[in-house]
Image (spheres, rainbow, N blue to C red):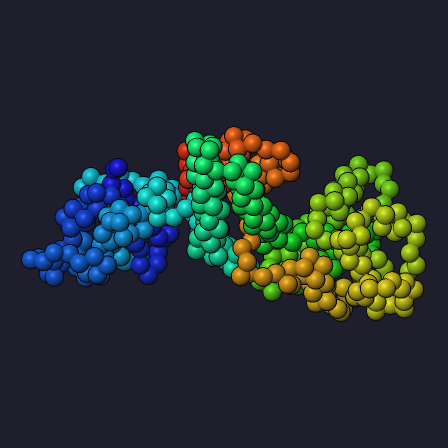
Length: 442
Ligand SMILES: Nc1nc2c(ncn2[C@@H]2O[C@H](COP(=O)(O)OP(=O)(O)OP(=O)(O)O)[C@@H](O)[C@H]2O)c(=O)[nH]1
Ligand SMILES: [Mg+2]
């Protein structure tokens, strides 16, 4: 494989910049550009930081160089890294010199792709690493760090190994039917499959929470016009974001704002007040509000507590799934006319009881009890593969009569599906797509 090079730190000014070289010629190229007293008559020691000068055309750059000997490097190949002063132009000049000496510019994620191809990390670990880099909440970091440390890989691999053993036993039985009892053999395999199914279902189930961890909990703020939805959004995000007036139908479009609460992202969606309208723009807004009711994880159903519930409120209430509704009785600074058990009484105007809403959202989604020591699947591709593997197992565990031949064929399919998660059996296009999402120099 070609020797590749790239700047691994973000382009711009900073304390230091790192330029990385990976491949067979990494050391030859690195040493040809680096002057260091300690290296004059000595062999280079891997993982040792050398202070010296990088040779530019008419100048030198005082920097550090480190060498990682294959296979003990990030990519699994010989790697040399220069830690130079963090200037964009300077880093580009250093990279140019390395290319002049024979290295090729690395594409996005090419170092990581080599690490995968050399067995340094599995595909699920690579995906978790991207999630770590892109994380915007503590929950995402906790979930992806567990995955980046290869915990999913280990679970999947254990299942694959058990299936492989089962397959080997079965093949003995198929080759020498006189030596083994077929019924007993089938029973053993069914037992292995049922255990695998249990683990896989647990992983598959975690995706519901995993999505909320990755993308945030979607919370729609819904109600009739003028009940104080936009005032509530502003109170929740502690910012004067949405327009508030006493005119009914002020909000026309949905407006989404994200807040980090106890390490989780909560996406609040302010919506247009729901009512019958002839105004074409308002009608579209109301349609969007109804979609938000359907698509969100939680609905904050806002009512004006200084007024009794009317027909419009009752009609709207019917369209909201009871499992995801939280009743918010706003304007509690005014004399009360509406009483609903378990509702949260707030005043958006006076910022009263707003924190209670956050707590109730976590309680209702059960994310207050989430256990990060267990794996939380956050990746759609992995989830799809898990679902398909489960589906293949269920095809045979639900059958009363199966033959060894069918089991043999089916187990190979399951093994293949699981391999897509770790990358062992993933096709090249998928692998390329995953690594292209990495940044340059990673
Ligand atoms: N007294 C009192 N008035 C409030 C409170 N919250 C909102 N209001 C007032 O109610 C009116 C409507 O508030 P908005 O936040 O615009 O209501 P909305 O539900 O977003 O209305 P639409 O966008 O038209 O659907 C404004 O005059 C607010 O000042 C509250 O807690 N107490
Ligand atoms: Mg509004």
